[in-house]
Structure formats: structure tokens, C-alpha cells
Image 1: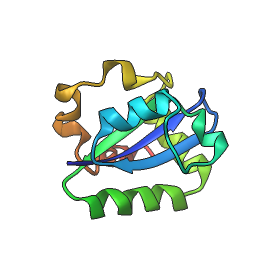
Image 2 (image 1 turned 60 degrees about the vertical axis):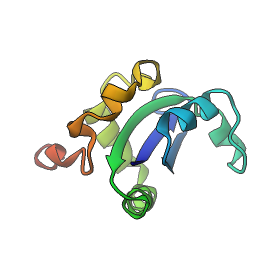
Image 3 (image 1 turned 90 degrees about the vertical axis):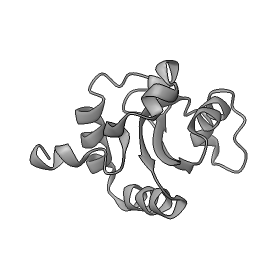
Length: 115
């Protein structure tokens, strides 16, 4: 499985949009400041706000590109709907949550009616 995810440094702060094949390891690397090759402002992004599961790397990468191309207000609006309290979900991340079918791409398709 592959994952597209969004991390932040604080509610409504800097956003980091990433893609990985090991979400737990990627989140741990961000939390520990052990991510090489990213901008300094993204080094501080240690709070997991959202993620979705993809069957292929190509799908996860395409979704990452789609989110990166979107304007910030679109991304923030979706985060407010998907995680209204901007809660760091890294602390509850486990295999069961990662396997939740509601997290399968497109995990936010239910928002189309609300957006």
C-alpha cells in the first residue's frame, strides 16, 4: 500500500504534503526531524492531519501532485471538514486505522456534496 498524507507544524500553519509506502515510518521521521531533502519550514511539520490509502505508488503520487497544485484555501477547507479540530492523528495511528476502508482513495469523496 501507498499513502498520501498532510502534516503541519500547528493548526492552520505550514502544510507538508507527502507520499510514502510506510506511513508510520514517515510520520515518525517527521516527528523526529529526520527527513532529509525538504525545506526547513517543512522540517517543523510534525503533526499528522490527514492521510489516505492508495493501491499503487502512481496513484499516491498523482494525488500528492493534485493536492500540491490546489490552492491553499482548498486544502485548508478540506482539512477543516475532515479534521475540524486539527487533531494530530499520529498518536492513534495503527494498523487497524491504516486499514480502514474509509481511508481508501478517494477518502474525501463524501465531501463533494459539502464543498
